[in-house]
Amino acid sequence: MILSDTRILEEMEMGTIKIVPYERESLGSNSYDVHLGATLAIYEDEILDAKKHNTIKCFEIPEEGFVLQPHTFYLGVTLEYTETHAHVPFLEGKSSTGRLGIDIHATAGKGDVGFCGNWTLEISCKQPVRIYPKMPIGQLIYFPVDGEIEVKYNQKKNAKYSGQPNRPIESMMWKNKF
Picture: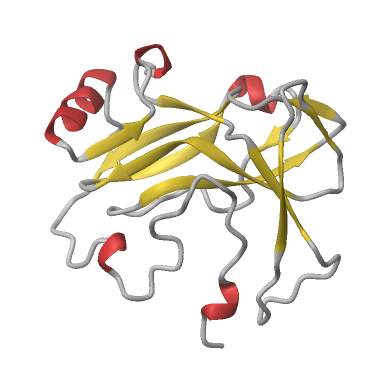
């Protein structure tokens, strides 16, 4: 079951969902449109190593836009800071974004109950495409949880992505033990 627009608004009033900045016109019948933040990043090394802290180089998207290139992996960020304390948030692409050949996540579309922060986007494209800061980039949908949550994500000691800032965050796979 997905939360409707009225349920999302009710949950925001109760404080279990937080979206900043919030714009009423971004609320759909069962989702909330999120927008591209002003910062993109690319990895500094061509070859990434899952056991290594792979560093990124951040840059601002100019007002006149930036052309994404195929075969380049970009990290972006949502303009919106969100908190979800009683539901599972999912970030999905918008159909208009997909029809431009833009993918906004490789595998990380599901958040956790207790996620607080801006969403890092895993951006790739099929052909060159110009993007702009503040353009609609995706949508959040919320699912209720069945059962009690023992430990919310923002309360976990090993929560690698809790409190994400309004800039892209690189992979923290290197913090895992394997």
